[in-house]
Image (cartoon, rainbow, N blue to C red; front, top):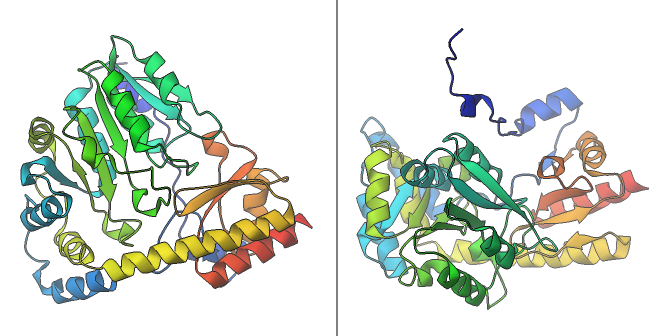
Length: 362
């Protein structure tokens, strides 16, 4: 019988989405649960974004601006780049897919750190690309090892900085040196979804390196620091050649109208972003100190999430915490069978997490 579906699609593993909190509560017979599993902003969305969205609800019978003109203008001004070098997507996930779409041919190679953001692998697999996985070194991306893995068949390198799920980040100086060591025909995607949370002054954004490496793509999102995950809106920076290519293949109305106006307003909400960063830093300090007191190992982070090593193992810890109404992320699917990942929550959520973890481990 003739194959209907492309084999590379049949070979894909579905992304493991979490269930809605309401369904988890119903299945587990619990109420009042807290979710610390998806790296979301515990403060909710930017208040300025909410106000702008409410004011524009009456316009949702209109198609959105297909070029994201005003948002691209504002992002270009904020980052000091020409507007033509800005691309907006249905989350930064869409831009990842667009990069693969315009550059990758079947059997060409894409280099990924391992473990890293799962959707890089899914995007590459859907276009029959060959994945070259380079293991992390002490939870950090190993740039020298990635450089050694580059071959004549290498087309794209994906680097999440800071890396999801480990929270470790590369220094800008090391990234610059790495870029200058590469062949001139390799596309490098630097995903900075969590860069706003980085506290190490040596970890600067790769946006400043765009002029030094023509095939560099830098990705950002409104999901984390701005709290707009549900709107699905992200953005990126690249050369005009690359953004022109993306515009050839992207859907014409890929960013919805409420996402655009919400993102526009959120860019002015510096007070909310600073409140988010302060909450995250204070939360990490509290969580680190309590885990130290419990004698548990963890991986320090440059993001709003981090890994915790648990003697029960990832899966069992997840299940026991869930029964207590605390939703964490098991890292089994990332190959980290002894670790869970949590994002920083509100102070009361952080305390509840610690108290629950102490309870299930006792």
